[in-house]
Amino acid sequence: MQYFEKTIDGGAGGRRLRAYLPDATERSFYRGRRPAVVIFPGGAYAFTFEGEAEPIALSFTAAGVCAFVLDYTTTSCGAPQAYPYALREAFAAIRFARENAGDFGIDPHNVASLGFSAGGHLCASTGTLWNKPLMADELGPDARASRPDKLILCYPVIRAFPPCHSGSYVNLLGKKAAQDEAALQQFSLERQVDDETPPAYIWTTAEDTGVPIQGALEFAHALADHRIHQELHIYPHGGHGSCLGNHVTEARAYAAPMTSADWIGGAIRFLFDEDVTKKI
Image 1 (spheres, rainbow, N blue to C red):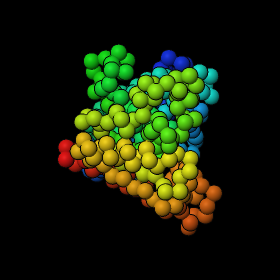
Image 2: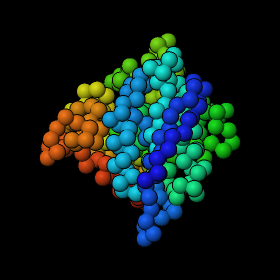
Image 3: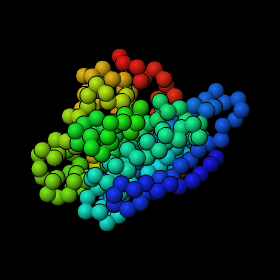
Image 4: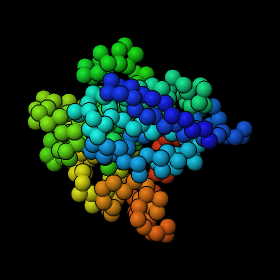
């Protein structure tokens, strides 16, 4: 495996992008055209949680996926709020993976973004805001180069209106803007889904008391309204922030994984499924 780090600058100082590129054997069916995933850890836009970073990337690389982890701007970095810096960095990370697809052996048409919790909000933002007026000046005429081909949303923050995780929006927008309805409308992402939103793999748990599951359900409903492929899982057990749901990221024995622990296998399958990008 090749590992390296790159600095992404979205205007709030350089942030680390970690790259994990698995070795491709001569007989690999996907040699030269592997899927890629850009991972955004969660942390309420206040920090990025390491349990949702390298352990996730290594799980994907073990399956032959090129993985990137972005330690995007949060309030703990000294910024007054995460927006617009984190979103600029997220789009730049996706573009980096796609622009270097030939060198990294990546299929440029199969670059996904993935996020947990508030990182799920950032992930969903890359899929819904890339073609909106909000980002027109930032991304320019070639905005599609920044669009992920697929979304993987892990117990995501989606809704900006109750029931929601209001703290994430305070850290994203700042306290004043987080009380402005017009600003919240732009970042309540179930309202931003359109015909060009990428297909999505979504999972959450019924026991999640950290981020209300209504946002994930409404995002799925919006995708269905636009006839966009999706896969939705609501696991019966497991609290918020369960990461891989096994002994690697949780205080539990090897033989006692959470019921949600199979999400990673489903997400890998979703990445390799070429049919989900076709219109229903």
